[in-house]
Amino acid sequence: MLGLTSGHGGDEYDQLVSGGEVVLQLHLWDVHEHTHIGTPDAGVRNGAVLWFECDDFGAAAARAIATPAMVLEDVHVNPLAQHREIWLQDPDGYVVVMASKFGDLG
Image 1 (cartoon, helix red, strand yellow):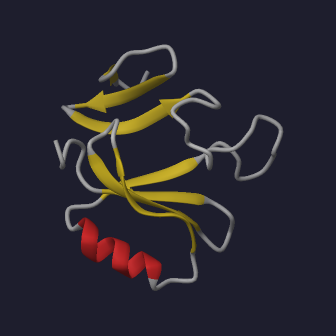
Image 2: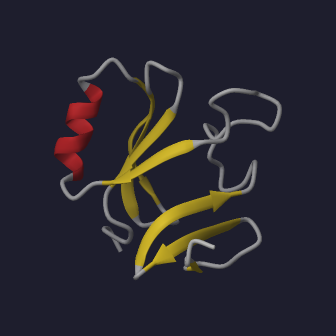
Image 3: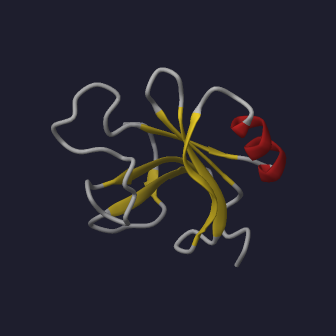
């Protein structure tokens, strides 16, 4: 319907791609050790994680840390994606991930 194609393929995780750009990532519950995705019975704001790829990750992470958002996981390397990321919870309770470009470190 949206004209997206699989960019990863897999039973637990996939990337939906348009024109070579990832536009959506899908994860099953309890895979890849993402503890902040949620649980099936938690209700509102659960299971939706807003994920942003940043050109200048260091500056973006510094700005994020200066906001009222709660840091869930400080800046770290995601070994599966070979990039840096930071996980936050915004004042409304949504989980927001900011990441450097996929493969940035590999």
